[in-house]
Length: 347
View (cartoon, rainbow, N blue to C red):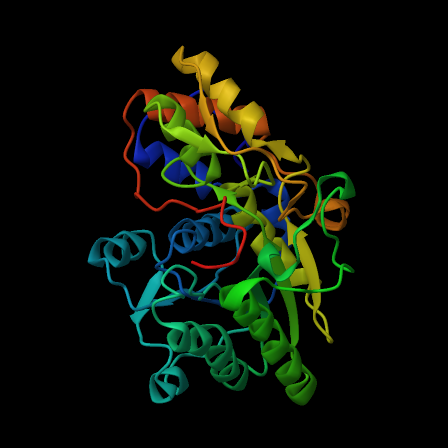
């Protein structure tokens, strides 16, 4: 089993994807205990490709044979080709087509990553179809599987900064139609899990960090380019995407009926002002700020997840260092701002 050792710097997308798809020893052991093959729905998104590679790598290290099938529309042919090169089977599919859904192969382990956020204000019906109708199709198709469902911390309300973040028992009060539809996704899966008896788990993720996108990149780019950093949502939670990938696989062993939820994020409540100042020191630039911190933010407390599955392997300081180096060396980005500063739920 390879040592989970992290580099001091990341210089290429190849190096980045290798780190993001690197299984931890805990993931290898978790996969060894999981029976059956994998279907990853929505594999073509930001997180899916490295998650699929991680499952393939973990199966090799665990010395077990797993069929890994990635399903997506694959708007980028390069993503499909790259997955094929590492042994991931790929199926192009419009998942809203019920006949196409019915034709998908069965598997014991389903990771559901499909979701629509940006563009909600322009096409609200499509957002609701993707986030609530599609889960019904998936639940009907994979009624004999265990399902890990990617959800979001946006199902919680804005909470006071002193609260330490919303816990899984915090009343759900989603702000805006995107967040409301995400709660709808959970409710639909919950309904069908009761009807069919399958086991599931909701991962309420708050801000995965890649070097090509994410809150840290948003702040770093603003500082580097002397653009104002918005402080209205002055605090966030973040977690390295590679840790998210590992937790998603491990979480399959925690699926239950009725489904439970796990907040997935890092242990810190991170100040946006402090982040900007850290990047300013690296870039030798004084951050420019606008507005001021409000008394509430979208924050999650992930202590339940940390207790069950352990702390993230990649620290906040490591992420800051990697992102600063990436920005200062003009590393490629996906030009997909997180809009973390949005407070009214309109995306």
